Amino acid sequence: MCIRDSNMFAQSINFGGGLGLATVVTDATTNVQATTLTANGTISDLGPGNFPEVDQVGFYIGTSSNYANNTRHVVNNGQGLGAFSYNATGLTGSTTYYITAFAVGNGGESRGITIAEGTGTASLSIYSAGDQSGWTFSVCNCGSANGYGSLGATSMELYAPWWGGTTATTTTAIDLTSYSYVEVDYSYAGQSYSTFGISTGSTWAALMYWYTATNPSGSQITINESSPAAVSLSLGNANQNRAYVTRIEAFP
Image: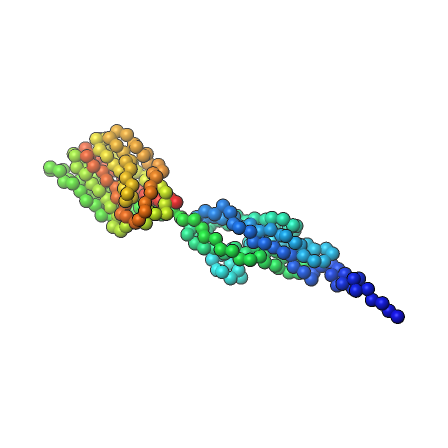
């Protein structure tokens, strides 16, 4: 009479692994910026079998909710139990990305759930050197001297004569409600009896005031806007002064 040991039979089937999948978890992303994020995952179980192992771990990352359409990033090989991460770069701001952790073990590839993560707001270019549209100019013509403004090949120029003034204004309202500061790159020539400033709607800040660079070129100028508004530069109360602007950019 032959008696079969069911426990031994089960062990012989699982010997060497290859029948089960590792358990992988897609954890919450961290360090989310406009163009980067850190994807995180965890191997919580290597899978059944006498010799379970995970040969490869990584993430599918992309803009499709279907993981198979996204880019597969291998983090490392030979991962054991525990956490792993991947720093994704070159992303697009204000965009939803889908992240799926995966692990390849004896039984093949297993995947965690897919999570969605929106990248941060990217910086916004309001003016760049060489722009030839998007601005209008108004001038105060005082006496025989006339002010002017122009969009040149290398800069935006504002000129104001004696006690005159020139203002440059965007032709459309700019939505800066998600931005916290602006930067203006500029140079200044002429006498200093003048005020040169920027307005983003409800916020106004002096760049130059008389002899003082209140906000030197490239400074971070704090803004707090609740609705879209035109952005403007003004050069006033001047004595034949010129301002040359090469960049206006907003940052979250």
